[in-house]
Length: 305
Image (cartoon, rainbow, N blue to C red; front, side):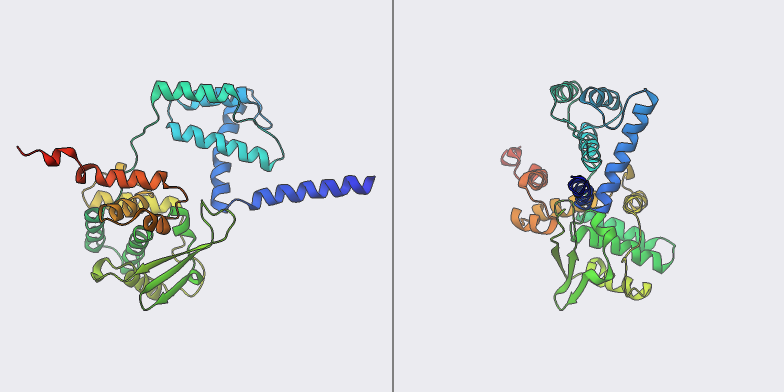
């Protein structure tokens, strides 16, 4: 009997370990950061953070809604739920007290937020021009250009971009193949390959600039850029400001959304955009396509004044 109890205990520990391993390191860090905020709130108000209950989650969401986007609220619920699972606790995040509170907040505040703007082709050219003209070391210029051009051309998530390693690259006559070991929509770690071709215009060619960066940095193994995903956002904001753009309107996601929107504007098919970005559903990609077509398919274009 004791052996059976021991076996079940070991299986339970192994199951919890599997739950942790099912998420990427970056995803886990994001969950832990969100849960830390919830824990601080509970501690300050004499509430239990883990195991918690739907009523406490609902109170936390009400407080959070005063200064946060609706999307942040939904992400915090997911994070708290995952941390509970990893710790071996059940939490009913579909409880009416949570769902109905969210509906009330959504009606009161609305869910549409002012999203970060995509970096489109003209913006990209202005940013590369700003990097070229800035008085700084060639080493830093090449790194920042490589980050921006590869990030844009591959439709990369920030986490994918900063996780790129030398071993993930395969240069071929047509361009470069980049192996993505794991991403937000590939938690099982099956991996995928992005192919980035050479551009006719060498000034904006991501493959050429990436090769130059690897050459000057003498990379033979490990991380290609060796930076944090937060720094990606800061780099974009820095050059957006120098280029005369509003840095508050741009962030790390602007490269990815910029690729998808620019590709849609150029007439790329939905499935080809999804193949590059790694989106598993059409919802987000169609949003980029609709954004790109706001003026192209505008009924006012048919009116002659």
